[in-house]
Image (tube, rainbow, N blue to C red):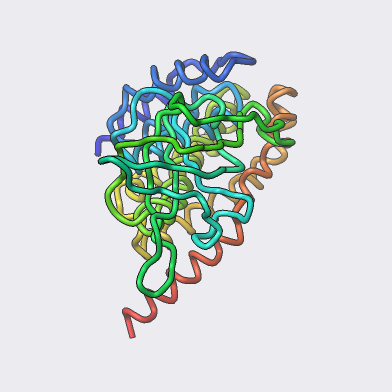
Amino acid sequence: MDCEPLLQHLLTAPTKAPQTETTAEFWARHRETARLFHEPVDAAAAAGFDASCVGHAFGSGYQVALRVLDPQLGEGLAAMCVTEAGGGHPRAITTTITPADGGWVISGTKTFVTFGTDASELLVVGSAGTTPDGRPRLRVARVCANEPGVTVTPRPPLPMVPELPHGEVQLHEVRSTELLDGDGYSRYVKPFRTIEDIHVTAALLGWLLRVARESGWPHDIQQQLLASILMLRPLGSASPASPVVHIGLGGALAAMAQLVETLEPLWADADPDLAAMWHRDKALLGIAGRARAARLDSAWAAISTTGS
């Protein structure tokens, strides 16, 4: 895993990015940068560096993570469709995936889908019945967003990262011939939380490094940001189901949190618009904090059991 191309990009690429851009413009810029890198974490960090805003840096990490989860996704924007009115827990999933005529029929509503309004492909989590012990048997269907029966309703922008589009996706007897192999929860939904954390964090660190260079922040700060990105590279190629990966990621996220605190007084020397954006959007880092803490506790418990 040669890291020199990534280091060259992060340390020498131009630091100016568009002040505003549409989702289509963001995606074109993301693809132009991401295709230069073989390792997904590198692609996320470099595309995050080039992003115009925090929301689009997050979007770069999210899109790279989806392609780690499903390498067969095409070149358009994609979206993971999990959350429903009752949440994202397996027992809250009421969307159905039913076999029919050599394919599958999907019906249900996903209430909160990142990039839902702009995605050309949807990974839809649905129930394909129950297991012998009564638990939902989840599967994931790959669905073209322009299929008959797919309706997407835009959701209002969030208070943070308002540039990131979200939508509600309704599926009414939508046909699909592409069902991903394996259990929908254990092979896709649960690992995606880890994969997303790794690649979104790399992208946000890349964005912060661009701001650091543009703002003339001290070299030791730039080095720490760079080191935090490099810390994520081996995690990106490891199994997202491994407890040791969760522990390593927990350490990387804790290091980033400490670094973000260290950066706080330096924002006075940054572009005022960038500083205002960061202070509006940095709450993004705390989303799903409780779930991450529970994941980390479980990982340590698993390690303790193994070593006893």
